[in-house]
Length: 380
Image 1 (cartoon, rainbow, N blue to C red):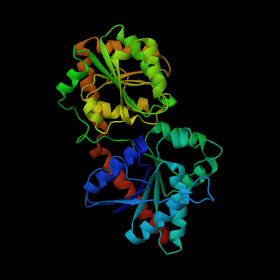
Image 2: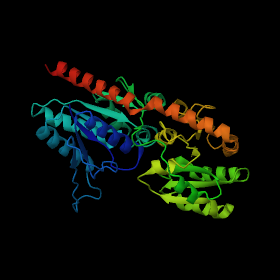
Image 3: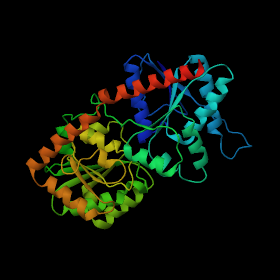
């Protein structure tokens, strides 16, 4: 197949999933064309089956805001016509689904009938999409998609609850590539962070309010009173300055390291003992899955799709959003006993294997083929 993938080229979950999916499809022999405004963060190697098409958005004095949606639709038309794509797969509804619909209508005037699949990832539904400014367009473009997928049952339920969706939604979960995410020997790195064999806790995110990073700090302060520990804060975002100040206020600065954005996060996960994810909302919890693949158990909230990933009492624990005390106590229960910690580590890996890329990729391929076949029936 020749597949066009539209995504945000960032470290965010939707961009990561889209890029890793495209790379895996290319490895299977499919021709994959990424179409976005800059090269995706994880599209960092050469493959004869991978192509990148930049969407150029020009500034004109007439516009306060450059019309990216129109530029994207035009680029989609161009790429589909000249690369003869079989299907488009757009990740994150806003504005990719509506741009794909516009492109599809334009292409029909050339006698080209191409289907498009929209994958919903989370905030395009639970936060931004519900805004009255966008909701009518989001609803329309989802319903005009030839295929719709969500990354969890929870997100599917939210979509059906908040939008008048008339099309079938298929759940295809996020996945993990074990060729990249697996426990690596990094003892020298671990010794540098925890010279006295302290436990190493880790949080990775984009440091937005919804990630509740201040809960991570507050939780760690309680854990530190019982278990000698270090905390690694990976990522960056608007809450980072407040988190750093809270560390100063609590007197735990020497035990916390802010590492910023990291490409090789799997190396940091490989030295970690516990992953903290107290998010207010998570459609799936991809960062937690990456941790599990590196044998790191997870302490998380029980919001959104997290209960579909983190099995309470097996590969980690869950608590109500904001219950820092309970999360800290459950963390201590895992960390203070070597045997308990080792068992949770083994279970984390076993759970991650349920989401192996090798299991999930065929779901997407089968779905593409069914959508393409259905399009042929409709236009024959």
